[in-house]
Figure 1 (cartoon, helix red, strand yellow):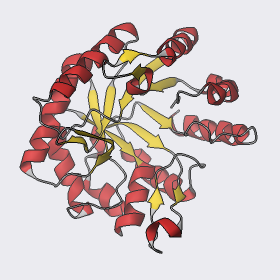
Figure 2: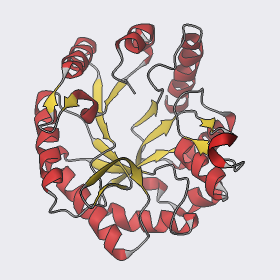
Figure 3: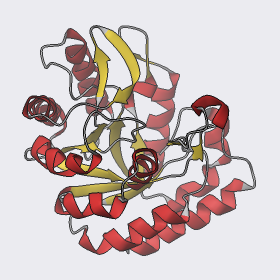
Length: 276
């Protein structure tokens, strides 16, 4: 997943021949309340058109669980439609959760209770996105706390998807399992794997003990290599992903040093071999 940082992009340019699909987060190419395009929008368009490859969209801030009469959601949909017209995506996905509450923009998705009402809201939001993009999905998020039982999430998520798809983020799942104390394999056994169209792989780190009072908290920080625990989950679940269309490697801008580039290349080759 390309992040909007010129140094990062330049350092990773040698990896582009190993990449078949470019994943773009549209809101990183906007600025201000009006959501007007910024300079990175032109940069991404140049990269995508120059490579002639496939493109998908992936968002964070649409707030799938917000009320669907939100004026903010309308502005967001208009900006997404503009971007999709200029640089069409094969599909579009959003993080599960709530990023807007009582008019406040929370920046990152917060968990929502596993109720019929919240499932309906997520499904209606996905329907509205589908009116723009056609094919859409929702990504399981990484949680530090959650109001429900984490092993209730897969069944609830299946209801919330409606006719849409799942983006399975395995590092998010691993992170949640560490933070909330459950077995990720049990979560995977309950989720509709036949609905997975994309997988995300990434790495993260442990939060400093000075932040957490000694509690172990893992962060989905995208600043390290994919850990072996996540590779094991991927290898175990891959045969069941009959609808898989791509696997995306995520890495945070500003975390790639020159010595990291060969490791990222090996990771991309390992992914390509797994889906060949």
